[in-house]
Amino acid sequence: MKREQTPILLPYDPEEFLGQIRAIIREEFANMVVQRPLEPRQEPFIPRREVANLLRVSLVTLNSWVKKGMPAHKQQGKLYFLQSEVMNYIRKKT
Image 1 (cartoon, rainbow, N blue to C red):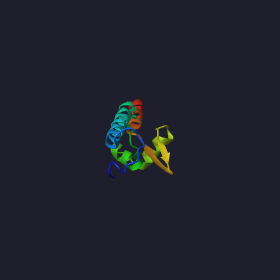
Image 2: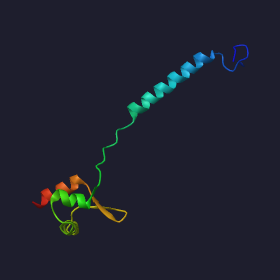
Image 3: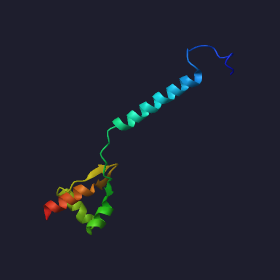
Image 4: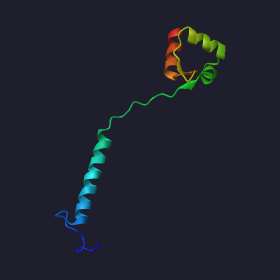
């Protein structure tokens, strides 16, 4: 649009106004990134077969340990483990 055809809605030049809006948005996004608290890194769940392989025990032995108190997490009917919990359990038992 030519300047003569632009309706006067603001007392600013449209390009200057858009530049100010962009600067404000950029500043707000920068503040959001700085202020956003870091989430603690979550440890991934390990399937029971992988834990059994890591510990070099059978699935039967692993199931027995779970019954005796080894921490495990059930999701959708399957058992999963956190490596840190498994290692702490093994350290306490030895």
